[in-house]
Image: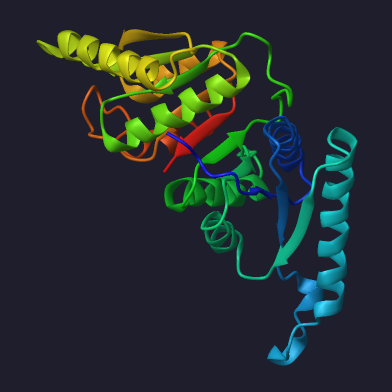
Length: 276
């Protein structure tokens, strides 16, 4: 149940959503004694595309990327002056760059897409792609999220007994032990015969596993009839972080059946962690 101490990668473009993600990541990494890598993916604009299909001019693009990265660095320095920070620019495409970076990262942190704008729709596709394909946990942070955790708020985890849910439970329990907060295990279930009994058994199993591995962590479980996304979205209202696995059994009314993490990206009221 131990996650390696490696860098937290933050996708940063200077937008409001990216600023919220960077603030959360820097505060979280400072608390855990980790490091931050700020990644800006430069995209070719009209000014860099020469007529006639010639080679693009890298100078203006590199200059603009450096400006975005140093803006991010200054933001981190205000929150964590002594934290080691790495700046990195890529031309490989947003989703591809972030997925590649996740191979050697402890965590990737992204902002919530602002879906009412064209730019937001692009970001939305990017966020969903990274959440689905990353090789490490991905945390998605809404613009209104507080960088500092509110004292006493629990970490909530969706659970269905699958390998993905077990990884999510491990992630949630380890963070709860570090932060000194409770864990709440949420099991969604359908109204079919016997589903409530099965959900009760899953909840008790999850609680027992947390207590065995982290005896100092306060843990409880909640059973809620309904489909996974609305159940977990509602559960996110009263927690500091909500955690789900990237894949599950597809049981318990679809809990963690692969699309739940993406379904929660714009619905969660707290930062969302999707664990791979």
